[in-house]
Amino acid sequence: MNILLIGSGGREHALAWKMAQSPRCTALWASPGNPGIAEVIAAHDGQGGCVPLTLTDHAAVIAFCADHAIALVVVGPEAPLVDGLGDSLRAVGIAVFGPGKDAAQLEGSKGFTKDMCTRAGIPTAGYVRARSAAEAHAALAGFALPVVIKADGLAAGKGVVIAQTAEEAAATIDDMFAGAFGGAGAEVVIEEFLEGEEVSLFAITDGNAIALFGSAQDHKRVGEGDTGPNTGGMGAYSPAPVLTAELEARAMAEIIAPTVKAMADAGMPYSGVLFAGLMLTANGPKLIEYNCRFGDPECQVLMMRLESDLVDLLDACARGELARAAAPSLSAANAMTVVVAARGYPATPASGGAIANLPAAEAHGAKVFHAGTAATDEGALVAKGGRVLNVTATGASLQEARDRAYAALAEIRFDDGFWRGDIGWRELARQAG
Ligand code: AMP
Ligand code: GLY
Image 1 (cartoon, protein in one colour):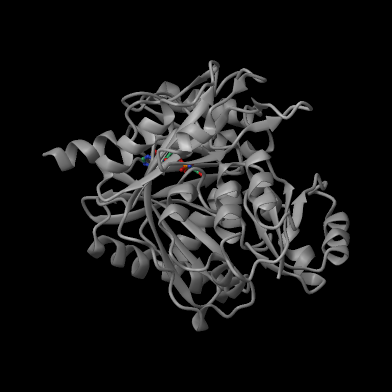
Image 2: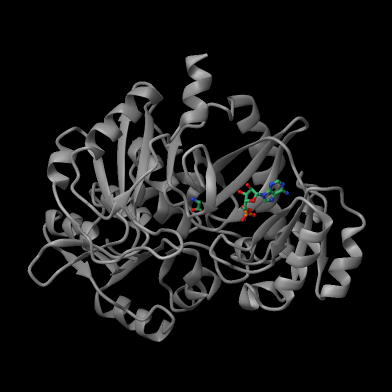
């Protein structure tokens, strides 16, 4: 079948790489794609290509699909889903992997998700939704410190503040209602602070059937030791042993399954991938947040472990046929990805730095996914964006995966780049005892 993949990051490169391995993938198109995805397509008989569609122009995307006989659209990032691209495509009979606009509120509105948790009895932090600064200030009295304050809408991972003092909490509320996060802060959610270790759990669903897709942990802070500003993620590994089989089963039964049911009951069945951010508290797993897409860079490590035909799985979700598909099979291998970012990330990443020697890195058995790269007219590779490359490897142990990823990284020439040297440190320390 002909497939259109939406997105341009390392997540999409990993999805493209895995989909191209499927005998069912005929032409693979990506919009906008990136140079790594272009390489995948070229190696895959060159059928398809990268096309810069205007993703907010749904009619243009539909027209492209009609012209290229696209049978499946796979949406990587959240913005087009929250914007309803899935609904527009489904309305004209095109199968889409990813939820519609209503169901994508699980990521697009934190208040929506909290209310769904209340209705379905899903374990999560206690909360209050506030639609004005006055309401929010009044609600603060009901929370201990630290207290978590979140802009309701999409804020590129930046709309969450853990306030240590009442003054900081009050100032955060004022900032959010004054527009610090634009429209995302027109409503805020105030939450109880949960203690524990965070882990990510992935499940795919067609709105009814559900299949476990594995666990991962990422490192959100830019600096070693998990310090400094938040980023989209500086590295990740899968599986996350801290999520034991028992905890994973609890999270599936107490969080994922009731969510899928609650969404169906509400008349907005969720299809696609559910990416649950969980806190492993003393009282069991609690939901921190949902994302309506694969994590980036968590997707990269999941794809390294996936043994199943990815096209089969995504297509089965898109067509409501997941019950008939074989469950996703993930290898027992450990996978790690290290993000190479451009100097200045996350505030002001340097653009245009030359990148070389990726084949030497891959000769170490690693896979280098492109995140923010561009090809110059002369065919050279340069940085374009904050997170630039994802150097990814597997191993029989996490330590082995780590050593392979960092050995590969040492080959890469990218003077403007930096990375964290301690990805996986918490888990590696635990394993070292
Ligand atoms: P979110 O965007 O909702 O994932 O929040 C970003 C980060 O803030 C999470 O990854 C957690 O580290 C932290 N966080 C969010 N909510 C809570 C909470 N209720 N308790 C403790 N930490 C939280
Ligand atoms: N790496 C976290 C995310 O994709 O949201």
